[in-house]
Length: 150
Image (tube, rainbow, N blue to C red; front, side, top):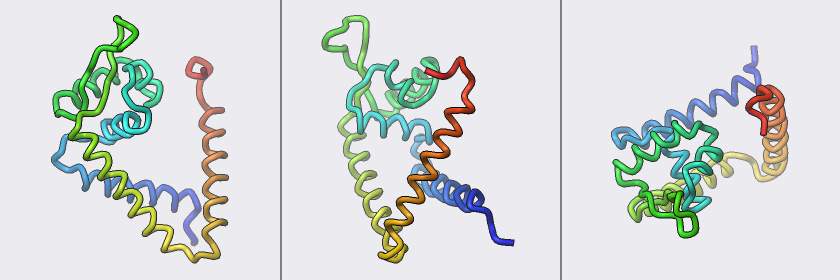
C-alpha cells in the first residue's frame, strides 16, 4: 500500500526535527528556544508580550524561554525606549552571528532540496505546498476553541 500524503508530510517533519535536534545537541537550545530566536531575528527587538503572541505561547512560558536564553547568552533584556514599564528582548551579538549562520545554512539546504525536484516540476510543487499550507491553516484555525480565537 502506497503511503498517504499525510504520512509523507509527517516523515518530512520528523526528518527536520531530527536534524534540528542533531544540530543543537549539547547547546541547550530547544525547538521552542530556536523558534523564539527566529522570531527575534525576523522581527527585531520585541516585548515579551509580542513574543508570546508570535510564538503562540503563554506569557508565563515566554518568560521561561527568555530567562533560559538570557542565561545562555543568546538574548538580553533592555529598557523600552518609549514605555518605562516595558522591556525589550533582543539578540546578543553572538546570537546574531549564530542566526546569520543558520539563515545561510537554510538557504543552502533550500537550494539542495529544490535541486532534488525536476525544474519542470518546481512550480507545481510550490503551488501544491502553498495549497496544503492554506488548507491546514484553515483547518487548525477552525478547530481552535472560541476562547483562543482572536
